[in-house]
Image (cartoon, rainbow, N blue to C red; front, top):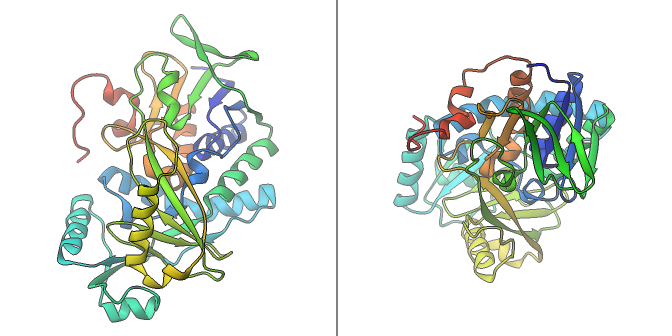
Length: 370
């Protein structure tokens, strides 16, 4: 398959990372974003690279570890290409358990996915983070976890894509993928047709509306967030429990999250959602009750039926690529997704592709990923 012109729908972190990578490989790339680049789920996240602490699927654990290892070199490359320094912390995640049930839930999940962490006595956890709740009964440290300014990272990817010659079109929607004789020949927007040899559907929660061959089973899941202003960074680690998390930014913002609500494309922030998030945060650290509330928002995460992302060509339409369904892991998996997509465009096949391609939904029920 000879490809020279690529159109990408979706200007979130996945689309921007793919655009930069493909353009650096000399593909001509047009990135089309229905709104503003980086304004959907990519800006609504907390930026945790919580591989062991968060992952609920063995294959996502494998992908996450590979992708997390790429971040130092990616961030250095983006800094060189854009002169933007993206905030990045490598202090790990401190996971607090407030009951025997919490601890058992964590242990079951770690065993299920094959993850490991360092168990801590409560006094050890409080030595690391004096501000955590005295009600914690046990703790785990996931020292390899990191976190990143997700909005800054998306902006850096977008600027790097533009710097190497990607055409970026904001405020323009892909209405239809043009297919002739089973092959992608362009995309249509209200501004007209954009000719291309290949199309990458990186439209996140909206990916299903741009299916061309096989259906794309991606649905939106709302995640609400709350931000407190603690003036100074409240914690060195990301603080996590079964019910919520708190992620510090260097400017004193403290990001609290998050809900998981299958409510379609409803992005409203709700009183119930805010109450659950703040309640979980106060369980982590009661002293946060005096911190001013700065803002709230929500984002729509793209979920799949089996909890795995979709990365691969549609086997029924030549040149049609899907890179969506990353759910809560879009920030974490952006570097590895861009790498895997680039490999596929160059005819290289990673063993992981057998498990995350679109063709896994072609027939039969969806099974477990073990």
